[in-house]
Length: 226
Ligand code: ATP
Image (cartoon, protein in one colour):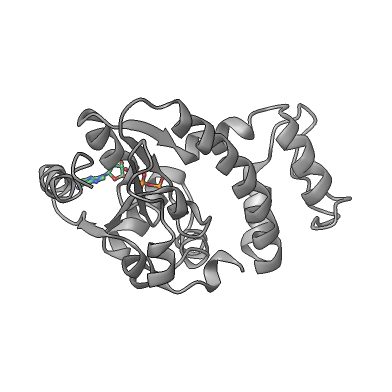
């Protein structure tokens, strides 16, 4: 059954049994909600940080086997490609902007790319969790979309007002509001994610407010007692 067909209580029940170690805390939230900032704080509290975005970037580094496979599938000659849109340049670098434009304008292509990448990222995440000696923070923007919450004992969702997120991402990535919105629309809406998460932490205040909210959430989620 596709992960997205499960209802929220089924999905929560399917999480790892509490007897399984190490304790894995999931951290997720939409684009620009402050996950990277929050992850640094949670790691300072003794969690081993597993960063799904960093794993994805490493898999798609210049000249990697994954980039070559992406070229075969999404390049001009590929099943999901567009004859006029190269996704890898002559040096073997992924042209991220072209790949994003290709998949964010076509949900079928987006689903094909997600399926391809989630499988590869998931394998590496499992390896990293297996190496950890203490509690793990699994920081993944698409935690629910990728079905990664099945690896987590508890999940924190970060939220932040849409206008603040859009402004931050437009400034950081030099993209238009429409491009940010296309990415946001491709993610599960916050109210769906809130049903699947154990704790929601709001990040509309100051950085100190965020750290306080996270510490409260961590107390609630104490890996020593869960
Ligand atoms: P993405 O999903 O796009 O990777 P993210 O969720 O990891 O983003 P961050 O990079 O942590 O978000 O935060 C976005 C920007 O907002 C960063 O420049 C960060 O320093 C800033 N920021 C995060 N939280 C706050 C806050 N409470 N107050 C002010 N600035 C903040």
